[in-house]
Image (cartoon, rainbow, N blue to C red; front, side, top):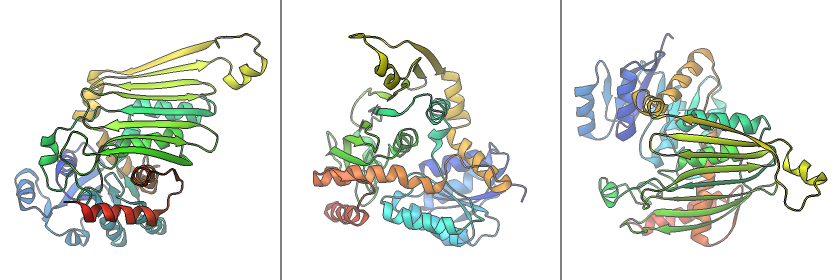
Length: 381
């Protein structure tokens, strides 16, 4: 195999972007050979914009195409684990868009299948893991520079979505169409980074508002609190009705503090490293209100770097290029598909807590969550 031949199922907002960039050759180890969509207007778009590409209306026909090595799943959320599983059973490598699914029970079953397919690569489009500031933060934490973690707080309220956004498609803003709101649509990347850097919590308590200042049935304003086995805690705040909003991630440990702040095209990481870890300092200190000596490292990404990373090339293509090299050369995946369940479990726990008004422990009761979700779907529009 000289190049990985990709087939994309779903060429809507993200799928058509992936198609154009693959066809432009941004991934030198990948090529687009097929696309599929149930919507006639999207297939017409493909006929006009894509060259030498087979076009299907039924994804099962695409799965039978011998010129497709890897399937990209870019459909509405509920279909992700269904199509991914069928693609794996058809012998294809699979790269699924986020989220891995809407509920963890389906994703757990998908993971079990993927683990049996030892010769097939299974990845997820967690492109935020390629952000250089998050990568640096991961290196610091994994290297012990931050010491034992005490706290992880993220305020991410710069997702502004007006009513017009929800009006553009019948599936948006509905439990039956999307399976949720800001947690399942906008925040899967951040929930992944939240656990990628801070680890999985042991319990969670959530407060959520459905249809805050918008005519939608799903949540668009969320605050949840997490606890961890080592005694650490966390706060996650998100919404889609605040403007201009904030994006600030702060992680505190015995060894110092990490802060990542993001605006539209500028990002800044500040690492304040204690010269003596706080727990060690506390054992010998005799001063009433001391300050622990520390050093400071600041890293930034500028507008030009981000324009290239987010636009001209795109973080998504970094995942594609890594995935292609994984298929061809055995390179380690940046975002293994089986890890998609982690961030999803946090969002499932947040929903379950918010709906029932109770604290939820991990791992969550998957049957209880699915029953509550189906109630929401049955009551929806």
